[in-house]
Image 1 (cartoon, rainbow, N blue to C red):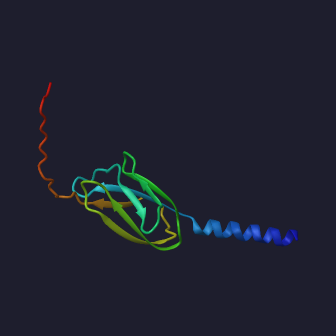
Image 2 (cartoon, rainbow, N blue to C red):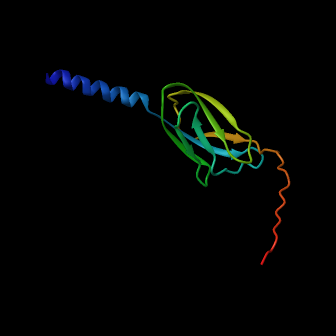
Image 3 (tube, one colour):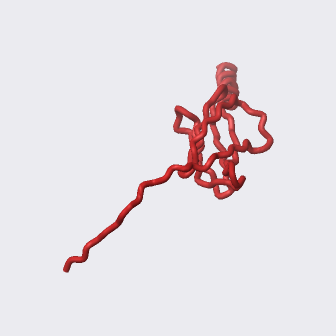
Amino acid sequence: MQKIFLLLCTLMCIITANAQNNFNVVVKNQQSQLPINNVNVQVKGTKNAVTTDDDGIANLKNIPSGKQILVINCIGFESKTVTLSFPLNQSNPFEILLNPSEDELEEVIISSTRTS
């Protein structure tokens, strides 16, 4: 009985260790090469997502093994999708460059009246 229990525990540890991949990324502005903060990096079709810090760096954890599509988006920049096959042999953060968006917003007019 103890041998079966030990075998099951070992198998669960191996499966859990193989299913969890980490991904380090740095997101930069393609024109200025400066890091972009508050960029959303998400594994498509899941709720697994992170936001970049002030240095444009994010660490996405618990990514399933196999081919995954990452969606990268930020206000003021064009969205980007990247397809990667996990696990990666990654020593340096993966660099993603985003193009600034050239969308113009409509004019906003604010008016008020004073009543007594």
